[in-house]
Image (cartoon, rainbow, N blue to C red; front, side, top):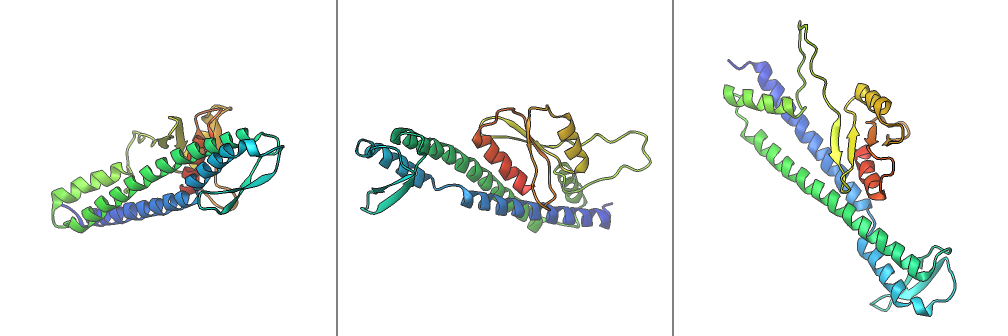
Length: 228
C-alpha cells in the first residue's frame, strides 16, 4: 500500500523539478538577452567591405551610412586593415549566431519539459498507488528525490557530475555538490580549462575537456557556470 510519505515525496519532488526548470528557463532567457545582436554584427561587416576602398589609413572607428541613410559608428582595431576588421565582424556574427541557436534550442527544450512537468503535476492522483510508485522512481532517476540507504554494507553507486556537449562537441562537466566539485578539479587534466562563479556566489565547478576551447565553447560553458 502506498504510504503518505511516498505521496509527499512525489509532490515535493515534482515541485522541486518544476522550480528547477523555471530557473533554467530564466537563466537561458537572460543568456539569450545578453548575446550580441547578430544582425548588427553582420551589418557592420557588410558596410566595412562595401566602403573599404573609400577608407584610407587605420582608425579607431569610422562612421558609415547604413541602408536607411543613418550614420552608424563602427569600432575598429587600429592594428588591422578595414577588410580584416570586416572579417572580424563576420567571424563574431557567425559565432554569436551559433551560440544564439544553441541557447535557443536549450530554452525550447526547457519550456517543453516545463509544460510536461506541469501536466504531470496536474494529472497526479495521490490515491493511485501504482502511479505514485512509478512517478517516484522517475523522480529519483531525475535527481528530484534523494534516497538514503540505511543499514547496508554495500556502498551506494556514486552519482556522476552533470555532462553536456557544446556546439563544438566538447564535453563539459559540472559538479552537483562539493565532493564532486573537488573530484572534478583534482582529477581533470592540468591543461583543461575550468570555471566557477566568482565573488561570494557558491556554485558548481565546471570543467571543459579541452586545453584549447573555442570562444563558442567558453561562452556555452559560462552559461552553465552561471546557471549552476
